[in-house]
Length: 239
Image (tube, rainbow, N blue to C red):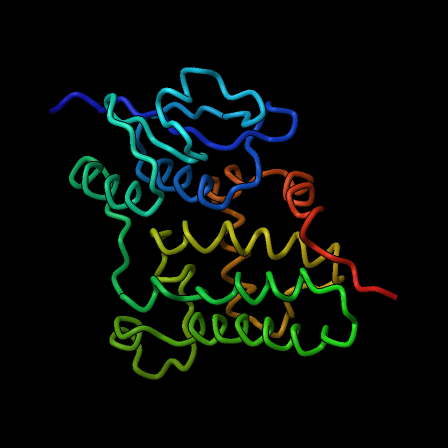
């Protein structure tokens, strides 16, 4: 068996520089490495006091970046592809999706959320909330629609019972979407008193299942970190 690679993931540090900060791209790679079952070192980077060694490793780069056997990678998408290629079966699980549709599920949520949460004008709020909500409804429909293999097993089902985007195991698509959904949940609650509607059963089931998984739950930043990051961009509605 080949020697295990030496892997170090550099992620954004929290405000106190002790834990993981708010960065969905950092969490995405953190989740991937955890799901792969690879041995790796997690290093938090305080960008206010970034040590010279980091500036030398990835000059001008923001976390996340990866050190893999002394090879530096700085692009999140390329790091994901690299890890999927290098940490492959039989030693490591494959994390790519079975269905290509899973990769794009929910990809419009974060953009509509940003417009919704950055708007201070009460007159525009209903319109922006409807647009944002429509993206959640679209994701919910995707999660409730049975996949072909589910219909093969039971042709009479009308609703999917899968745990995650692509099936019953977490995939790269989940690692991309879940960190963003966690931010959405935390920020919307404070600034709009908005919670994901319970009627969206597929989406609620998905999030409930995800929060039970250590690979997601323990890679999330503290809620306070997310709110600090959004202090300067999220707006309360003007009264």
